[in-house]
Length: 408
Image 1 (cartoon, rainbow, N blue to C red):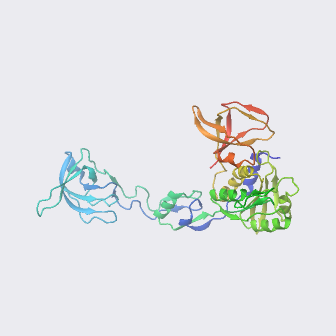
Image 2 (image 1 turned 45 degrees about the vertical axis):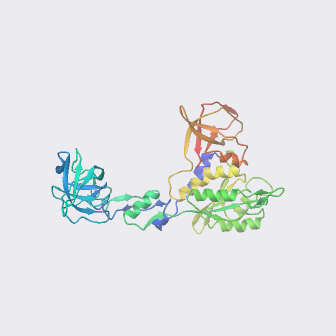
Image 3 (image 1 turned 90 degrees about the horizontal axis):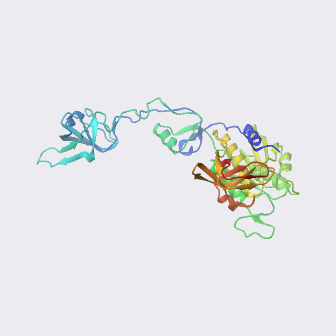
């Protein structure tokens, strides 16, 4: 058996980012940019007020207050039509362009509109003991300049980047497309979640769980249904699954009489890269590659027990999907933390035990949750991390520092 680190290296060595495609910006959330994007405008496009207030000549308030004639009101989206001279002010809304002649803006909270004499002009009393030129003004091009590179290849497009792309006039970009991930749970014992299992049956939890896990990391999941323990049916469904970038099977990869998956994959020309990894849960993990029309399709055979399936997805499938998408991440974030409570470990393989990470007096602490093995999905629900106990029979005392993998 190979180690977890060796297995992950072999997976990532065969996972190559997909070629970039032109993608509408509206559909690009979560994708990785594959080009340099430059701005076609200055932002802001003009000197503007950053508050509701009055545009003034700062020198008018050198004495701390001034009574000024209001010559105009400018709202956001409108432009000033009059020049502000000493003794005058223009009322502005936030975002409105600064009128010519003005060099500061006094907040509306520091203004008092004065009674207007019959037929007279509107006047305002402004107070501000330290009004300086440039106050409450954002100058043209402060955020970005026309021609400036704002995003580059490899940048992950989050909501803020989508907004920025629209600000600089882009409606489509070159981006690495989402990978398609086909999911095929196998086994005669599986019944739909809506059914009450009869003797010898269990509900299909792996299929929906793995589809959701693929969707969560930005892939497009493809539901292949359930594969029965029949070579012909498995062959047909696996061939369908090889149309996707990644095929994830669960069950049928151990050493039982009906563990048919490795044999059927070999018959279909899928190259085995490794089978079995030194970890618990997840030892029977199978990984291979199929070349279909010049493209490598990644194939994972996960153990059938649900916790084993999800642990193997997090440690191996998720990093592969992220690599195909052009992301730099390698799966769940890895950190270290002190063990909150004493824990006895037995076994010849490293164990990835469901746990909770919490703050402690000397930094983060990790506490294993009550867990009854690879079929205990409820135990994993209580966890937000996996704590790795090294191989070997050993008692880990509270305070021991261990590797921790964060679950999303």
